[in-house]
Length: 115
Image 1 (cartoon, one colour):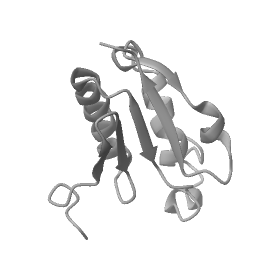
Image 2 (tube, rainbow, N blue to C red):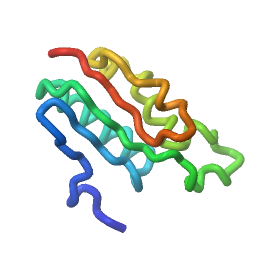
Image 3 (cartoon, rainbow, N blue to C red):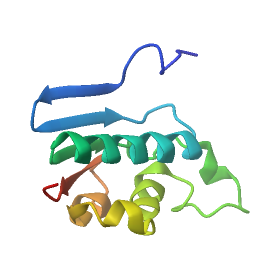
Image 4 (cartoon, rainbow, N blue to C red):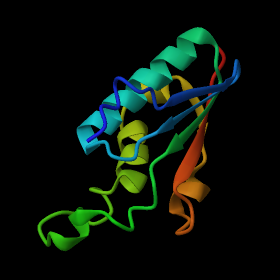
């Protein structure tokens, strides 16, 4: 498997927008990367973040009856982690929840507050 820490999946599209692709990350890895990205962007004055989670269509978690289908798939779990983290929410102006809930969407945007 590709070492995602060696090949960066964080893309700096412009000075005002960042993007991260979480394909292949475990839930804990994804949450840690997103937390780190939000805090770094806030400190750097970057206000727009695009988080690519994937749609969860190929998740093996759907086969396990003891796991929550929604909360074990990054598409739902990462936004849930963010909204339940008061340190992160203090820095966020808006999370595009509409795209999180769209079946056809595998990403969502975050708008950070000004520092």
